[in-house]
Image 1: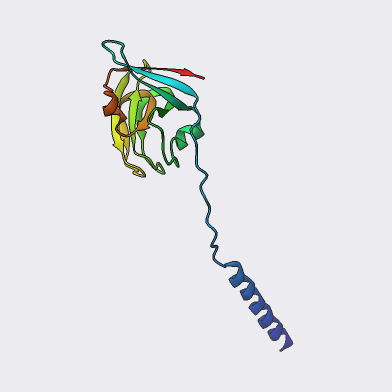
Image 2: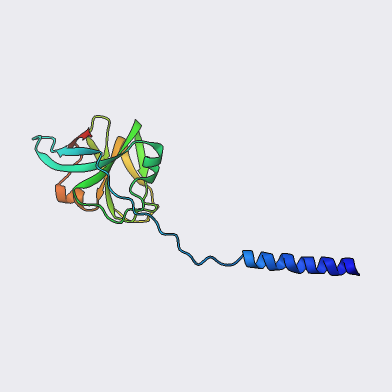
Amino acid sequence: MKLRLGIFLLSIAFLSVSVLSCKKETSKIKQTEVTFKKEGELSIFKTETDALKAKLDIEIADTDFDIQTGLMYRNKMASNRGMLFVFDDETERFFYMKNTRIPLDLVYINANKSIVSFQKNAKPFDETSLPSKAPAKYVLEINAGLVDDLGLQVGDSVYWDIL
């Protein structure tokens, strides 16, 4: 009888601890805002005349972590900024907008630093594949609408300097 009473009391104590430890957390985790870090300057030139179409400050994504993260978790980006993704090889590229809060234009660039295609007005948080439709070694992400505002075209040349 004493053994049963002891087991019963022990069971109650265990249940009490279990219920208390499952208490719902009410604190909220705040995402740290990622800020722009200028790592280079990029220029885009009209192919036929070599006229400068645009000059942008860029961040460079050339590590696995930077490439996977890209512009995710950013709340805004100035119109004179962008992110340049640098890959080891030239192949068809596929991007998506998971965890990306700002609409973007994607500019696909081949190994000769010539624009080969665009994906315009990519929607925030959309995980639909955004293919390059041509082999690309580099991808430039800029604010949505800039491809049209700057008059960028397939065949335009892109050059950059790393700081």
